[in-house]
Image: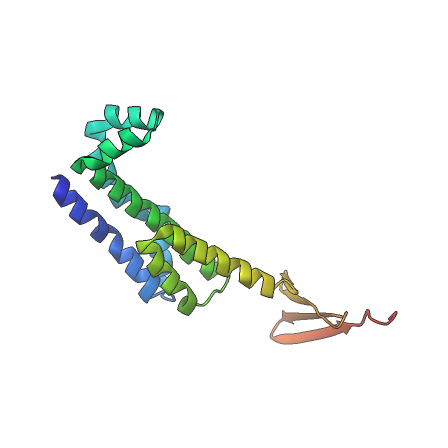
Length: 180
């Protein structure tokens, strides 16, 4: 049973990864990924593998040391349980990256490779996305959006405001340089 669960757990998460990477603009992808419960199948596999060994596992987590962890991970059930744990948490991190990137309008052309890296090496994928997120916030710090009004704190010392109301665009520029 352990080998079967080990083999099965990735395939339980794969459809969610495929949707986020290959169909990021689809409405059904957003709906599918909106729920944090997408991690439930790998977590159920984790529980199925870990619960029969809970006393041993709990004791190891209560007082972690390298030798005990090596022993648990050296058993088939321990390695398979940690694999399921990784799959679930990688998916949770990928889900956050996907949702956060959509909310911040980060291009899927940039995010999809990061999600692919996150499947394989989630700490590197997460770090990559956080770096992209920070770089994007640095490049957009000069502007802000408030209740339908885009405000540009331009480098010329002026403030430009644009609002969209009833299909019309109003623009104003307020000069604040040279004592204006």
